[in-house]
Image 1 (cartoon, rainbow over the protein chains, first blue to last red):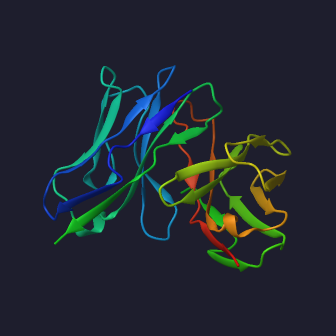
Image 2: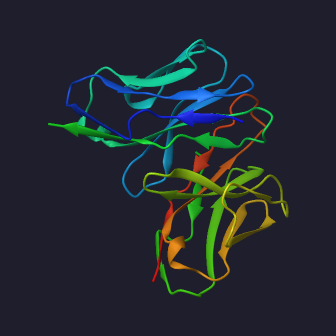
Length: 114
Length: 115
């Protein structure tokens, strides 16, 4: 069975600083991986996805993530944080053979200090 | 753009009431999902459906049922609401037609309070 671990339920950075949100997964088959963002009182919005093409994936709002098979990781980064990036971020993994079901990590709340 | 809508953004119900949460998607997706989101617990799958009239239990189906009579609509039913069902409920849909994607599209959520 697949699983996702997000290290750090809360991450705080200063505006302009590097954002790094960590995600490690386990999967018995080649995974598809996703990062979603959730702003307060809203649903989840897809930031980016890895589907076995390029290992470095670029998403919306300047975010990117790198798939590292040897480390079973899919960390999310952004070179320079903005106040509007403050939100909760979820990493998710799916198994091709599991009918599109996603397993989500516990989420990381990103706080951006002025 | 894919649109997933949920019937209410905020809902307050009393213990023992029967509660219906409705979800509609407009992209002809065959898969639909209901999740529950609680602080510190992330998203937990309640039920999902991969076709009309088909349903499968997720991780936490107890106390819930679902209905999918039409492809675009997936309803979550709380037969007798209890205070421990106070939560944010998220609906999502996806398709297997676009091979290699499997992303899910989410509605805005319904924040349910049971008093």
